[in-house]
Image 1 (cartoon, rainbow, N blue to C red):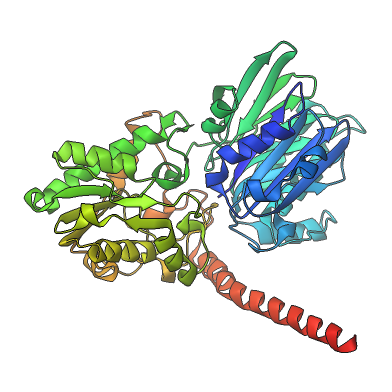
Image 2 (cartoon, rainbow, N blue to C red):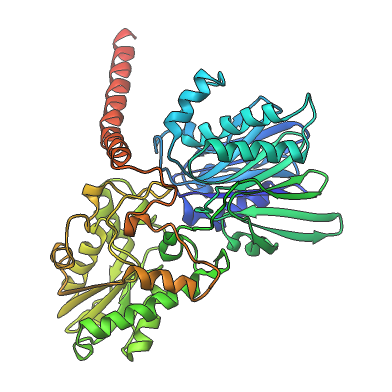
Length: 508
């Protein structure tokens, strides 16, 4: 999962893009980058770390221009620690293009082979975003007539990208000397929207992953980019939009509403906050059926994403609501952190249980989801250590049983606590006295109640149905084998570096 921005303004955009990345920091904490354009020359700075760590005053001064793109990364393909895979990516031909991408391509290996054999393009990293950039560059070159690049040629190139590329992709690219292009995959799996700001010098445009970035930067949201649609904003301020896919179907990722997106965002017409309130209402119905309400003394959320669901659940069941966990806001999101050991340690650093709220009580803990179960187990144990009499656990989403291949770094099947286990076995694994899950239909209804026009979702991690239709068991086996091999490759690289250092020291 990543956060992306693109802007065409009448004034310098470096600070605007920086501020926008801060508003999207929740979507990725591994790396950040900004590329701006002045005339036909790009300025770029990117690196590993959070936004505040990557950029200094000298970096911002090296990013002049009135248009640009930006990115925060949460790695789903490639190497998390490789700064070369931080975005934006750049190619110098044709025209000069920078690109940022949120999502994951499911046919990147095939495309990489085609790029080399047919298009004579070299891919330098393991990132599928670089593959996507080169596909776009190749199609722009084929669609352009001589040195002329107009909106018709740009939209023709995007149509060819849709034809060749599979998977999830919300993209923003800047073409040197022309303007900013944004497009979304034919299923609209990953979110993308745009807004405008009227100034004395003319209209300014901002494209972003979430509406909260538009509002926070003073832009009025116009609408979401539709699945398969492309929008092009020329540097002269003219705006162009066209549907570039043959059979687009809106099927946004349900996990955006469950966990990833900020609650104050609106995605494809549905308020994330409103959807989470509805999840709490439907979860309350399950609780009422499966547990004795008289046995529950208090409802507590696991901060922060589950708070709306927990509040609504408590209100519907007429139960006391308390904040039993205090969150350290300077620790990153544990779902994003690699490695079980790091994740266990970070849970204790991130959350502190207030014993006064737990001692002698039967506590119902509400979380947005249970993925690996590591965090849930630690939280249940923290509640017991703080004096809870009984600890019940409720999830506002169904069991996560399948990997996500569309841009969420969902673990392999073997790492998912719900894979191969029934609800009681999961309950025992996390150490709870009772466990209640939301059902899939209620989770989906929580969003459609807010936005009835939404009728289909990408919910593969819950139901195993992949909307692009190209995911086989063999594909999942391959990506899991690659994931399992990644730590070994990292250890080999570290060992090689140590050997080179020792050799260098010995020679000196």
